Image (cartoon, rainbow, N blue to C red; front, side, top):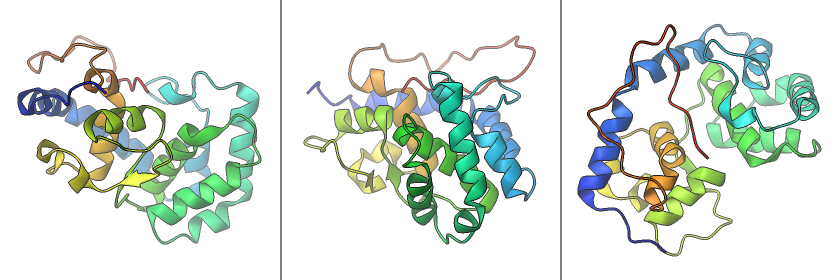
Length: 203
Protein backbone atom coordinates (compact mmCIF):
# COMPACT_ATOMS: atom_id res chain seq x y z
CA UNK A 1 0.00 0.00 0.00
CA UNK A 2 1.31 3.45 -0.95
CA UNK A 3 1.84 6.00 1.81
CA UNK A 4 -1.28 7.95 2.73
CA UNK A 5 -1.03 11.46 1.20
CA UNK A 6 -0.01 14.22 3.58
CA UNK A 7 -2.47 16.71 5.00
CA UNK A 8 -1.10 19.37 2.64
CA UNK A 9 -1.77 17.14 -0.38
CA UNK A 10 -5.29 16.33 0.78
CA UNK A 11 -6.07 20.02 1.31
CA UNK A 12 -4.75 20.79 -2.19
CA UNK A 13 -7.03 18.12 -3.65
CA UNK A 14 -10.07 19.54 -1.84
CA UNK A 15 -9.21 23.07 -3.03
CA UNK A 16 -8.77 21.83 -6.59
CA UNK A 17 -12.11 20.03 -6.43
CA UNK A 18 -13.88 23.13 -5.13
CA UNK A 19 -12.68 25.19 -8.10
CA UNK A 20 -15.46 23.55 -10.10
CA UNK A 21 -18.20 23.86 -7.51
CA UNK A 22 -20.34 26.04 -9.76
CA UNK A 23 -20.19 23.49 -12.58
CA UNK A 24 -21.23 20.63 -10.31
CA UNK A 25 -24.08 22.75 -8.91
CA UNK A 26 -25.26 23.36 -12.47
CA UNK A 27 -25.11 19.64 -13.24
CA UNK A 28 -26.99 18.75 -10.04
CA UNK A 29 -29.69 21.28 -10.95
CA UNK A 30 -30.08 19.49 -14.26
CA UNK A 31 -30.71 16.18 -12.49
CA UNK A 32 -33.08 17.76 -9.96
CA UNK A 33 -35.09 19.51 -12.68
CA UNK A 34 -38.67 18.32 -12.79
CA UNK A 35 -40.49 15.78 -10.68
CA UNK A 36 -41.06 13.17 -13.39
CA UNK A 37 -39.34 9.93 -12.41
CA UNK A 38 -39.55 8.47 -15.90
CA UNK A 39 -37.70 11.48 -17.28
CA UNK A 40 -35.06 11.17 -14.55
CA UNK A 41 -34.52 7.52 -15.48
CA UNK A 42 -34.21 8.42 -19.17
CA UNK A 43 -31.65 11.10 -18.28
CA UNK A 44 -29.76 8.79 -15.95
CA UNK A 45 -29.07 5.82 -18.19
CA UNK A 46 -27.37 6.05 -21.56
CA UNK A 47 -28.67 9.44 -22.63
CA UNK A 48 -26.63 12.36 -23.89
CA UNK A 49 -26.59 15.27 -21.44
CA UNK A 50 -25.68 18.94 -22.06
CA UNK A 51 -22.12 17.92 -21.10
CA UNK A 52 -21.90 14.87 -23.37
CA UNK A 53 -22.22 11.22 -22.47
CA UNK A 54 -22.03 9.99 -18.90
CA UNK A 55 -18.33 9.28 -18.41
CA UNK A 56 -19.04 6.07 -16.49
CA UNK A 57 -21.34 4.72 -19.18
CA UNK A 58 -19.25 5.31 -22.28
CA UNK A 59 -17.67 1.86 -22.07
CA UNK A 60 -20.96 0.00 -21.67
CA UNK A 61 -22.61 -1.52 -24.76
CA UNK A 62 -25.78 0.29 -25.88
CA UNK A 63 -27.76 -2.93 -25.40
CA UNK A 64 -26.83 -2.96 -21.69
CA UNK A 65 -27.90 0.66 -21.26
CA UNK A 66 -31.19 0.16 -23.10
CA UNK A 67 -32.00 -2.97 -21.09
CA UNK A 68 -31.12 -1.20 -17.83
CA UNK A 69 -33.30 1.77 -18.68
CA UNK A 70 -36.22 -0.49 -19.54
CA UNK A 71 -35.88 -2.37 -16.23
CA UNK A 72 -35.80 0.85 -14.21
CA UNK A 73 -38.79 2.31 -16.07
CA UNK A 74 -40.77 -0.86 -15.36
CA UNK A 75 -39.87 -0.64 -11.66
CA UNK A 76 -40.73 3.03 -11.06
CA UNK A 77 -43.20 2.42 -8.24
CA UNK A 78 -40.68 0.45 -6.17
CA UNK A 79 -38.05 3.13 -6.76
CA UNK A 80 -40.46 5.87 -5.75
CA UNK A 81 -41.49 3.91 -2.66
CA UNK A 82 -38.00 3.96 -1.15
CA UNK A 83 -37.49 6.28 1.81
CA UNK A 84 -33.70 6.69 1.80
CA UNK A 85 -30.77 6.67 -0.58
CA UNK A 86 -29.59 3.33 0.80
CA UNK A 87 -32.99 1.78 0.09
CA UNK A 88 -33.02 3.38 -3.36
CA UNK A 89 -29.58 2.00 -4.22
CA UNK A 90 -30.59 -1.45 -2.98
CA UNK A 91 -33.70 -1.35 -5.16
CA UNK A 92 -31.70 -0.22 -8.20
CA UNK A 93 -29.25 -3.08 -7.58
CA UNK A 94 -32.09 -5.60 -7.44
CA UNK A 95 -33.76 -4.13 -10.50
CA UNK A 96 -30.60 -4.21 -12.62
CA UNK A 97 -29.24 -7.52 -11.29
CA UNK A 98 -30.70 -9.51 -14.22
CA UNK A 99 -29.00 -7.19 -16.75
CA UNK A 100 -25.72 -8.81 -17.64
CA UNK A 101 -22.93 -6.26 -17.85
CA UNK A 102 -24.62 -3.52 -15.81
CA UNK A 103 -22.46 -3.69 -12.66
CA UNK A 104 -22.02 -1.60 -9.53
CA UNK A 105 -20.88 1.55 -11.34
CA UNK A 106 -24.11 1.81 -13.31
CA UNK A 107 -26.09 0.90 -10.18
CA UNK A 108 -24.60 3.83 -8.28
CA UNK A 109 -24.80 6.27 -11.19
CA UNK A 110 -28.48 5.53 -11.74
CA UNK A 111 -29.30 5.71 -8.01
CA UNK A 112 -27.35 8.95 -7.65
CA UNK A 113 -29.18 10.74 -10.47
CA UNK A 114 -32.59 9.27 -9.62
CA UNK A 115 -31.95 10.16 -5.98
CA UNK A 116 -31.52 13.82 -6.90
CA UNK A 117 -34.97 13.75 -8.52
CA UNK A 118 -36.56 11.94 -5.55
CA UNK A 119 -34.63 13.97 -2.95
CA UNK A 120 -32.82 10.92 -1.59
CA UNK A 121 -29.43 12.09 -0.30
CA UNK A 122 -26.68 9.62 0.68
CA UNK A 123 -25.97 9.24 4.39
CA UNK A 124 -22.69 7.38 3.83
CA UNK A 125 -19.96 7.15 1.18
CA UNK A 126 -20.78 4.31 -1.21
CA UNK A 127 -17.89 2.45 -2.79
CA UNK A 128 -17.53 1.19 -6.35
CA UNK A 129 -14.53 0.72 -8.62
CA UNK A 130 -12.67 4.04 -8.46
CA UNK A 131 -14.09 5.23 -5.15
CA UNK A 132 -13.06 1.93 -3.58
CA UNK A 133 -9.52 2.34 -4.90
CA UNK A 134 -9.37 5.85 -3.51
CA UNK A 135 -10.74 4.79 -0.13
CA UNK A 136 -8.36 1.84 0.10
CA UNK A 137 -5.44 4.21 -0.46
CA UNK A 138 -6.59 6.27 2.53
CA UNK A 139 -7.87 3.55 4.89
CA UNK A 140 -5.43 0.78 5.75
CA UNK A 141 -6.95 -2.68 5.54
CA UNK A 142 -10.22 -1.66 3.87
CA UNK A 143 -11.70 -4.79 2.29
CA UNK A 144 -12.77 -5.09 -1.31
CA UNK A 145 -16.35 -6.07 -0.44
CA UNK A 146 -17.17 -3.06 1.76
CA UNK A 147 -20.29 -1.35 0.37
CA UNK A 148 -20.09 1.95 2.21
CA UNK A 149 -18.06 3.82 4.81
CA UNK A 150 -18.70 6.66 7.22
CA UNK A 151 -17.12 10.07 6.76
CA UNK A 152 -15.26 9.66 10.05
CA UNK A 153 -13.14 6.82 8.64
CA UNK A 154 -11.47 9.25 6.23
CA UNK A 155 -8.87 11.92 7.02
CA UNK A 156 -10.22 15.08 8.72
CA UNK A 157 -9.59 17.17 5.57
CA UNK A 158 -12.75 15.54 4.13
CA UNK A 159 -15.02 15.97 7.14
CA UNK A 160 -16.44 19.31 5.96
CA UNK A 161 -17.63 17.82 2.66
CA UNK A 162 -20.95 16.18 1.86
CA UNK A 163 -21.14 12.44 1.27
CA UNK A 164 -21.72 12.98 -2.46
CA UNK A 165 -18.72 15.32 -2.66
CA UNK A 166 -16.47 12.79 -0.93
CA UNK A 167 -17.65 10.01 -3.25
CA UNK A 168 -16.86 12.29 -6.18
CA UNK A 169 -13.39 13.14 -4.87
CA UNK A 170 -12.49 9.51 -4.17
CA UNK A 171 -13.43 8.69 -7.75
CA UNK A 172 -11.90 11.67 -9.56
CA UNK A 173 -8.61 11.63 -7.65
CA UNK A 174 -8.22 7.90 -7.00
CA UNK A 175 -5.01 7.74 -9.05
CA UNK A 176 -3.61 10.69 -7.07
CA UNK A 177 -4.34 8.91 -3.80
CA UNK A 178 -2.60 5.76 -5.06
CA UNK A 179 0.43 7.73 -6.25
CA UNK A 180 -0.15 6.99 -9.94
CA UNK A 181 -0.88 10.63 -10.86
CA UNK A 182 0.63 13.92 -9.69
CA UNK A 183 -1.07 16.21 -7.20
CA UNK A 184 -3.25 18.71 -9.12
CA UNK A 185 -2.39 22.39 -9.12
CA UNK A 186 -5.15 23.99 -7.07
CA UNK A 187 -4.54 27.33 -8.80
CA UNK A 188 -5.50 26.03 -12.24
CA UNK A 189 -8.93 26.10 -13.73
CA UNK A 190 -9.77 25.41 -17.34
CA UNK A 191 -11.48 28.24 -19.16
CA UNK A 192 -12.58 29.39 -22.57
CA UNK A 193 -15.04 26.54 -23.12
CA UNK A 194 -18.23 27.14 -25.04
CA UNK A 195 -20.23 25.07 -22.58
CA UNK A 196 -19.53 24.08 -19.05
CA UNK A 197 -18.58 20.48 -18.54
CA UNK A 198 -18.32 18.68 -15.21
CA UNK A 199 -14.93 17.43 -14.18
CA UNK A 200 -14.30 13.97 -15.61
CA UNK A 201 -14.34 11.03 -13.24
CA UNK A 202 -11.45 8.65 -13.80
CA UNK A 203 -12.79 5.58 -12.04
